[in-house]
Length: 113
Length: 114
Image 1 (cartoon, rainbow over the protein chains, first blue to last red):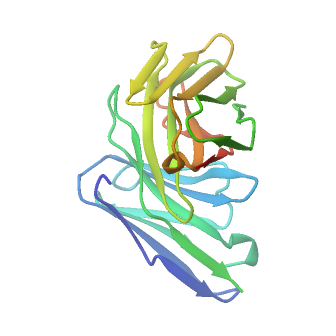
Image 2 (image 1 turned 90 degrees about the horizontal axis):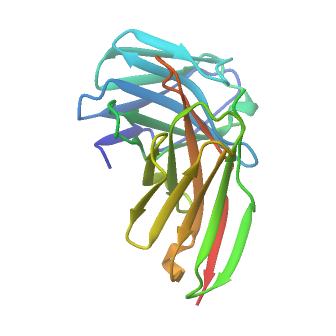
């Protein structure tokens, strides 16, 4: 499982509240990603990081921010959660190199009421 | 803009059949293509990775092929089993220096009947 954990695994929150999801990896990989998965849309990239303090936007970054102050942790923050952000959120890592694959965490199911 | 399509969206087959899942992409300038399996309520499990310079990769009963010029990849599953029931997704990593983004298809939901 490439040593990836996500917390919390489930969360229910109310519209307008801030939410932070955490992705933790134990293998010192450089690249980390946040995706959301919704029916009919597949997985869509929110943000990714290519090193400590180095991040970039994906295709659905509006309403989300990220931070990476340590190699092992990549945080996804919803500053003011909306019902449209109800989704399953997956963290992934890529080890880099020619033959390395992308590996995923177990996911966080977020419900915004 | 790269788009990745997987057809059919769902597939139901009897146990023992050999089957092919399809993945199409619009921009042939890819770095690699990866196939994943996702069980209900679970994360994604990597199955096979094909580099843009490769034609196919094999792992057990799985064989993935890549035809960049036609923008297609296929995942062949031999002698399907009920345990193969899952959603299968393909993801394309864009080519070019400094591109670390992956574009996913919406998946094919496979059900293998005992």
